[in-house]
Image (tube, one colour):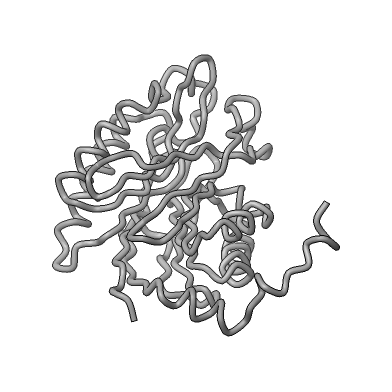
Length: 266
């Protein structure tokens, strides 16, 4: 058995359109996470935590080139020597705004970024945000990992592509609302089972306009079993995972070896 990795998922409330309040809230939750006796190895946050879904004003409040976010999180990860999967933020690049994750290593370096590929029409994302066009891949503690954002989990091809390229962990920040809790848990569980990898999903909680968010951040193992699950309150969800379980599960049910892509892939 390998050394367990300790996780902390910051299930936070987000004030739409108020980056100052959100940076302050995140900072206090980060300090709480690293003050634990067993300090986490990896810390993760929800989707669009800097601005929330204040889409009508997003161009005026998005983080220009992500500089504020990267400076803040780089300094914190370096100081406390923790990996950070920085949820996602509204990032201004040129004339466009993207929904982007940054991943930091223990030295505070940005080792990967990923902009949401699938924009969610039910929340008018496609009217205000630009879609990403590349996979989110990086390495954490010697293991390949992938990143997806919220609506992306409805597209099994994306998770499978990451798994085929070696991912053993999948990180998913989200703002997933009521009444679709059943979809949230079922889709995440399916992605874990079918790809035989850990799925680590951090959702927001609270209310924004008329939309209620239910939290229920989840850590799932490669069997699809729940390691940890939060309720609907603002909280930090802690969990431990053993990466050696991925190879064990994949050796017992060899789904990757038994694939026949020539038949069902276009």
